[in-house]
Structure formats: structure tokens, C-alpha cells
Length: 233
Image 1: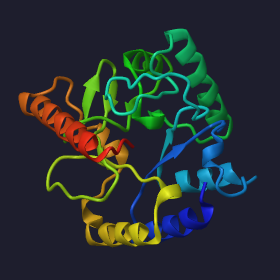
Image 2 (image 1 turned 90 degrees about the vertical axis):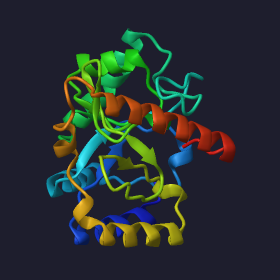
Image 3 (image 1 turned 30 degrees about the vertical axis):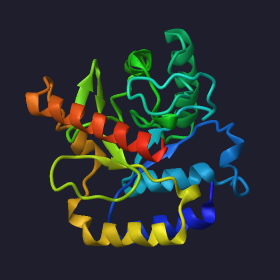
Image 4 (image 1 turned 90 degrees about the horizontal axis):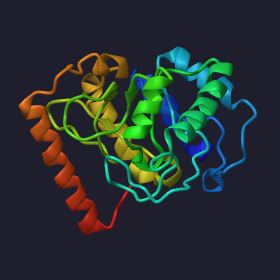
């Protein structure tokens, strides 16, 4: 990870008083993410962020793609989970969960690498006592079987004016200009941010018509945008 960019950004966000959702890879095997030397105190940092009030989401287990399945969201044709059997997915998720529990940072939230998970992933997550996934379409949290999905629509800051969504930020690929723009947005809109747990508590047991329509609308809109721009993540 680009620690030299992440730590200053995280410190600034904490000064503003905003909590974040942090995707933590329990047993990272993805060499493309090793931009800077690994830190022996990695989990000490994660525990510090958790004590600050940040949400810790299990970001896969190894972050290595071994299928070409785009899952229920249909975004990227690569996955660590989608396309595998229930047993395979459960074992893989359980391995990651055990590491995070051992480090005393596990929380019942999941962030799928490449935004790719299928209905089997959802069932495996439920079997392992996960509650929510930070991904999905629409403007409001909703249930997919027994798991709550909180919409994740963009990789850049935007204030839609209503509803709830998360912003996907990949610090490794962010420029200094993008980081500055993100901080400016957070400062300007700090009162519009809320805690992830507060959002999942808004999920209705039964989706309303306008929720279903918003998911369909944003799904088609974002798929169209990605097709035209060639952008995936």
C-alpha cells in the first residue's frame, strides 16, 4: 500500500472528524498492491483506526482473482469469490475472518475485491455471521437475501443530495490533486457523512418501489458510463 499517501490523508480526515470504511485484506497475496514495504505494525494501525470509530470491512481474503465471474453487480469480469462453490467461498472467507478475529479487528462487514461477489458469496457471508456488504446500486441500503447491501456508486466524491452511498477510494492510484479534491469535498460536506452502522440500520425488510427503481436506474447508468469510458473499478 502507498503508506506515504494514505497515512497523511487518514490523519487529515480524522482531524475533520469523519469516520471511514477501511477495507482490510487479511492475508494479502496480491503483489500489485505492494507499492511500498510492508509494515510489521499493520494491525496495530488497524486497531487504532477501529478504536477511533472507523468501520473495518473484510476486503476479501487474499485479493487474488481466480475466476472470470463478474457476480451480481456485473462490473468486473474477475473475482476472488464469484463462481466458486459454497464450500470454497465459505472456507476462504472463514480463513480471512479468523485472521481478523485473532487480531481483534473483525467486524461483520464485507468489501468484495473488484466489486465481484455472487449469491453464493452472500449465503457464505450469512453463514459466517456477516451482516452487510459495502457495495450495490441505488440510493438506499437493501437486503439481498439475509445480507444488507449499502450502495457504492462512484470512485470520486459526489453529493447526490439524498439517500446513502459510499465512495470507493483506491489510495494507491490517487494523484496529489485527487487527494486534495477529496479532502476539500469532505471538509465542505462533513455534516453529510454518517457512520456505516447507522446506514445499515436504515435498510427496510421489504424494498419499496422507488428503491427498486433507483437500483435499476443507477445500474443501467453506471454500466453505460463504464462502457463508454472503458473504466471498471
